[in-house]
Image 1: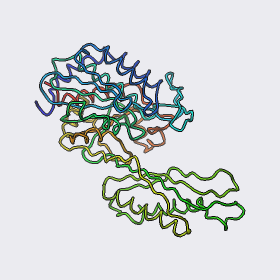
Image 2: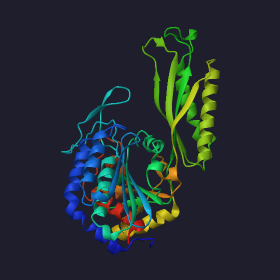
Image 3: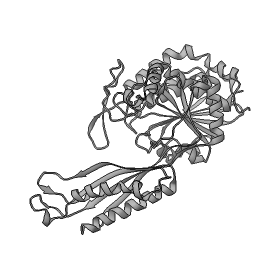
Image 4: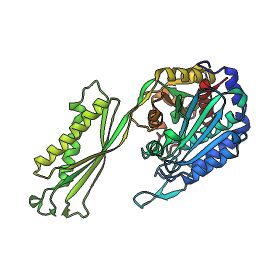
Length: 427
């Protein structure tokens, strides 16, 4: 095996892309119009299985369903060679779509709290599923070009941060072949036709927290007879902002954000409790531990200052840093440049968003590479980039207006995944 698949082998696989493009685009449109919330991806999983079993060469594939609840894995053992795990996440978000697309989602669902909410593929997971299905279909149709084992994982609940964890808890390590490497990609703001890749930490760890402040209830007209947890919460939120600004080294990267405050039932009632929820993001486990230690201490001190009972501080939804292996990333970068052109391979700028992809390779202790591919019209993006207005001109992931251009976004995702996969499996 060479470190980069011969261009002829990649080309041989991708000669099939024009022929499946109508199917790829129609599959994507269906996925976009039928999003499902985390751990509710039943129709999506069924569609994945249906498409895989209809592929020429699918008799070689072993299909496992129900992994972690709604996850699907497809294992294709095809001769001697490495084992490559390739992952796509499947879930949508509780967002009302505002794209104006003819295939826009009008779906609704019931969330975990029993509330009816709109659902949209506002993070582009529909592109991930469609491009992984196309990669699998092309490789099955070109068996003479590759050798080894391909493991395609369609993962639930990335947006809820527990999909990969659920698959691992469901025996993923024992039920799938041990991979030599894991690969994943994500559609992101950027010019369609391009990719973004970098070695090292590219996405932050995540530790979500919940602080329940315990006061003493009373009448809104007589706050002196109560201990007001609402004012306590307001003061605490301000104090938490000093964790990064005054208690973490300026050389470290960290974010502490409070995203939710909940208290009370009526305007003239001082409630018994207030709940503050937020997230800590860093690139360093020690910095994360320090932030959480300070957070605990600050919450206790705030309560003590009010003469209130000690608060309940909980942490949950931990995600590790997405830390691309250098040698693996070098190989992927070479493959992407060979297929797409070096000018289309951009640097992945590290961000404070978090991903659970790495929990899959981490379960085996194997290296991985995770990269991005562009979502928006390249000419418009270039104009906005020259003017420095990308943030204003293009919606980010999770926005109601997030809508990747159909092409060349889908083709690029397929070409990138095929090229990267073939750099291990190609003959």
